[in-house]
Length: 201
Image (tube, rainbow, N blue to C red; front, side, top):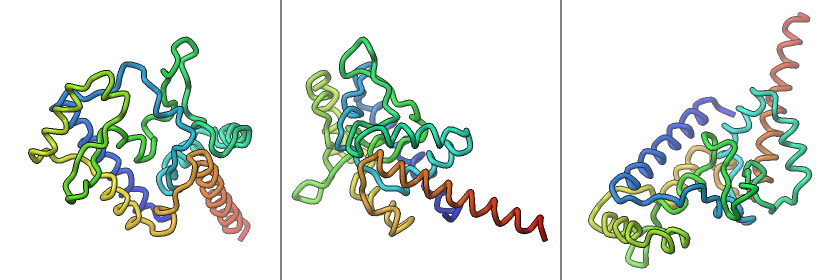
């Protein structure tokens, strides 16, 4: 895995975060306090590329094996293993690896799709529309009036440009994480073996 690709991916994540933060600040659009409803969706998908930074971090922390075991213990299409549900409030919870989450988790409810006229419009969250319809309407109007917001299609295209192989194939998030952890572990093992060979010589 080219280090430049990882650097560019992290930079893309920063750009997404800046745009979603700007949209939230200018329109008041925000998730209900503690809401984890989207994280409980068993259909969340991502690419292996997008979770490589998280895999690198988990190997660095020495936590890769424990997370692989957790992934093995759940169904491939189960809720994300990194989601920690609130034991007292249904549909509330938190992401235990928030800093390293993939693009869908960063974009959801704060990004646009192209409508049939090719114009960007907010892909609003149902929960947002129920709890804060005024903010949803403000966001829609701001985007219609030219406010720059992240776009799902454009982000997908940029991920594909970074790595046409790893950045295009969507998998259930736990399965993508499993593949990323194995890939990073294999690279680390090969580098370690190569280093041992150099020392032996």
